Length: 137
Image (cartoon, rainbow, N blue to C red; front, side, top):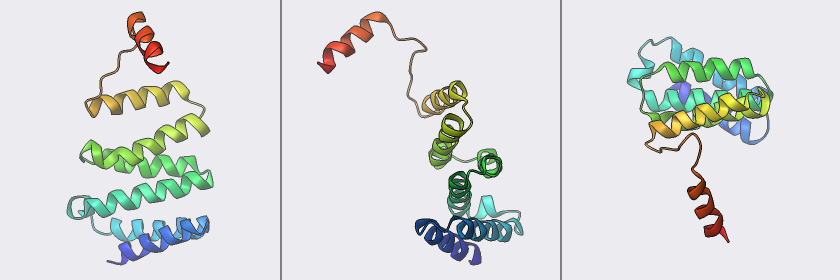
């Protein structure tokens, strides 16, 4: 697949800090995939990897609006939560570090953890806090 080759070229360019070239390669790969309307159904692993990589590159370039477009497309797909973990991590980072949306980042992280079966209380109880303090000593 030509899209896969462009993805590989984009990853190599990203590793060598040629971010503009990397963004170009991944955009070409995405454009090629969009010709086929069934890409997400037929080759979901490639689509997830491609959109996640494109979003990471755009994040490094500081193009948050493009990050949101790529992640938005990925999040719209009916995929298992495990396939979206890297994308969620990137979204949380972009909210926290660039978007200055700390509370939204925390809420999203808690939501993702909940979807993964990790339950955290909104506010820990005092005995739990004391127990953890003593445990760390």
